Image (cartoon, rainbow, N blue to C red; front, side, top):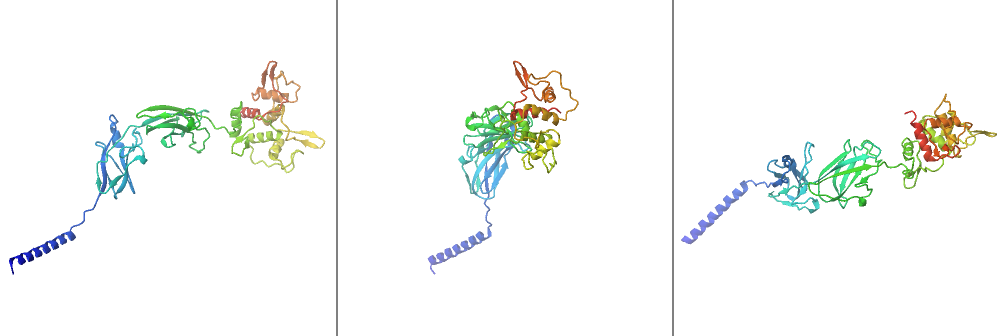
Length: 427
């Protein structure tokens, strides 16, 4: 065999041997597992309290959500991920103890406050250099009070951006104080809404700063970093009846409504009206007094005490109770006793009703009338005098003296005033 073929054979044999050895190494060597992570550094503004950096944490949002606290000294972090893929990375700061609220705006990489402007980090292994600088936010604070002196605890205060997005939220404490921080510095309108923390029923008007009821009428606040604004709100009670809100006896009408003495009329739009200037009918008066008395468990007689009040009358039970309690006596006629339920009740008859309703005994009327138009010979002089002496009625001041106008039909707003003052007599 010549030298050339021999060398060729040896080279081929050596190549085959090396290939076999390499193959054995490939089979024997274990595969290296790929790890996924994102790391970087978080910083806070110069001059920020030392503890704020230690309250920061990083969140990676992808198919899974992972988070990790940053190093309280250096701000460094490494967040391990279960899989690769695209992740949004955000940083926020929060006191786990809930004692301090760091005024730092949550931020997305590579440097935006808004998720829709953030860029994703593509992770195929260990990604480094995802650094985020936190900025100071806006702080707002103030108070919420209720116009009637009620407890404003639990009122919800919202700061909304131009598109209605909520920028900040807070609730009031037992003193009506509220505080929100770490807010994005943009233009906002701020509103306060009272929520009953026990019944979750809103009974006060919502208000936008300043003294507005709609966002388009509110003062627009242009927020700036590290800026503080003191805002105050006074919420008015929502009127039960739209047509009595600005009336002379609105508080008294509200008292009747809250006590369940009157329900008014429900309109198609769901609101209620009281009709304060309408006169009071005798049947409605019976219903008012029945509810004021808080009667429960009363069963009316099967036969009506009045010939003009059938047992099918809407207020039959109330009228029967009024008669049985001797608050009303009606009129004796040749056909029987009449109540005249649809007749307007005069102010003098109203005085008689309340006098009997109170169960007054041993009262002696004064020798001089409290009103120039109520002589001592008036049928209900004693009752009207008692009403004046107790302060339930005040009458009208005129150039000729104080008048009661006994023959005038009583209006529903004045009736509310009478019943409210009457109800306050015991207290």
